[in-house]
Length: 353
Ligand code: GLA
Image 1 (cartoon, helix red, strand yellow):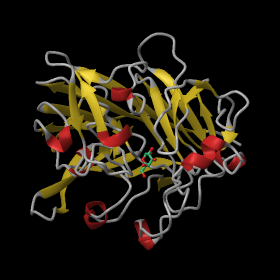
Image 2 (tube, protein in one colour):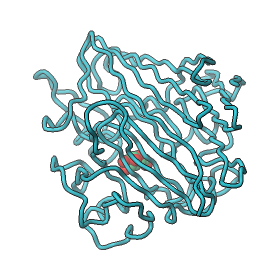
Image 3 (tube, helix red, strand yellow):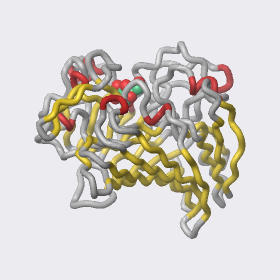
């Protein structure tokens, strides 16, 4: 089932709608046209009890204010571009620096702050909503009129599928992702340090003091970033490790182990008290595993509760950060006549203790 309601207005008076997607098992996803933000996601625990497992706010106001990308579609370029500039075909482009010297998550007004056009659908696969948005040539410093289409599909197999597409009329970098923060015990139910995480990644891209990849692809073996076997987030997060210290915890791009193209498992997360399991598969080469290190209790979230440090984690499937300045990384350049496509599948289930 899919339904649409009004959710308020932006500061300039643009109407924002909310779509509610429900599957045959009662899983429910609510997403708004502002930023394509997933404002709630209710999934059953091992006793069948539905609970909202994503961080955010009760009302539109919270999302219109300053916040760290809760639930949003990120574009044009997810993650950081070092020194907020890049060269493409011999031309240098300057971006707004909104993260120290870097450009982060699309700039000052990225796709997370756009009001998207939206159309709901029901088909054999499930129910969903298609979000579309065109970013004009030069917006946030990026070249080309870039049209993006992001489809959320909720299936009766308890999957939430994100399909991304984009076209451009000038060569331009693109790195679309989704920035939902999960707490599988339930939003507002403490920190995520007890969640057991498996990342299907033998290597990661180490960062410098500005959280920009150095260009190295480093093995995780023997480091606290080795999640090839399920390990609690909190087991090693405070270890005296250079990479953990630079990021204040986990905030790293992992290189997904894959055999060829297509969907590959990126991560599996299990929360022992609720039994909830989240599996993430993607066609993308990387996943940013972020443990909410910058959350600090100053924002008031759902139910009037402060959003505390490490009370949520993100798995942002993506191309590697700073790729426009790293020719050795898989290319993020989209050219006229091409269509960018990627897919990420979130699968929800439960596990007995
Ligand atoms: C991403 C980044 C983090 C942080 C969050 C938002 O996960 O990698 O460093 O910027 O977004 O706070």
